[in-house]
Amino acid sequence: MDRPPGLNLDDALFLDLDGTLAPIEARPDDVVFDRRRAELVSRLEQRLGGAVAVISGRTLAEVDRILGGAPACVGAVHGLVRRGPHGLRQAEPSPSLAEARLELGALARAWPGLILEDKALSVAVHYRGAPEREDAVKAAADRLAARTGLVLQAGSMVCELRTPGGGKGEALDAFMGERPFAGRRPVMVGDDLTDEHAFEAAAARGGFGVLVGPARPTAARYRLDDVDAVAAWLGAALNASAA
Image (tube, rainbow, N blue to C red; front, side, top):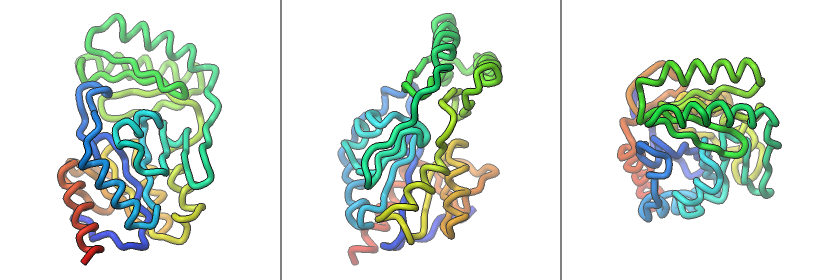
């Protein structure tokens, strides 16, 4: 897969967070605020006339903590929470999450290395610290999804059960229906399986996706090696637009 072309000033830019803007750490809380990263996103937002959004599995509070409140537009918890030009919109949590919290919490307490993350609209178990438990975590998540109707969202070393609805593709589409995104070419940059629907949504609107990390089957048209390559590509776009 080729390196992506440069951004245009009339593009709409959508960015995943972990593994795209920030490196993936052993624990979600280990990802911290970085001034240079926050300034890069803020400058892109200004240069593209506000048409920049982060679409992440993180909560809105976590996105703001890591990026210092930039950008203004965020699709959090896979789009179940969306802060856009017209304010904040949030789905109602599924009552079935209580059952998922109980069962997955017991799993995390029983096996050292597992981390339970409660996002109010979803609950996730990270097994990066106990990769040998992957099959057991996936089996438990599969059972819960079948029994409760919660959506199973698989990611990089994580299984997440979330309130039905939303999705990163739907979040991108919602932003593209509003100014300042409307009428622009969407560009989605992400690293995980959770970003695939957003890659597809961008392509359907005449834009493209950029996969971050090793090559794999994907709906993205282009690829960048890692977080540093993303930062360099975004920085080059700023420099070119300033010339």
